[in-house]
Amino acid sequence: MKRLYNINKWLIIITLLLYLTFYLGMLFQMVLGVGQVLMSFYMLYNYNKLEKQIKFLFNIYLVSVVTILSVIAFGKIISTGFITIHLIIPMLIAFFHLYITYRIQKS
Image (tube, rainbow, N blue to C red):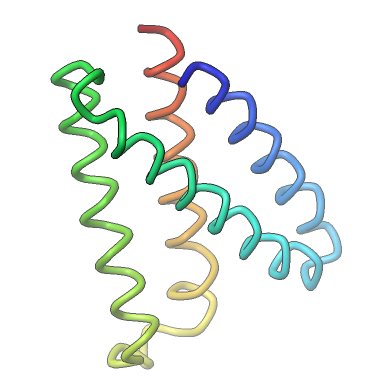
């Protein structure tokens, strides 16, 4: 579980570097999302091994991911803008996932 942080860190660094071209950053953000979802499944499989505070953070992460995916899938909040819903909020959630994996590495 301690390797998750390094994998996650490099996925985010690559995504941020590719955002210099914007289009490639948008495309690689999908790779980052898939990678983080796979990491989350692994964390969910080892849920009992996590500390109480990390479990709490992970539950917040899961709720926020389900919420933003529902908003994107159903497209109910169009007025707030494409960039906010499809790019900014998912990247904030990705940084939160990075923080959770950092906490797992430190424990």
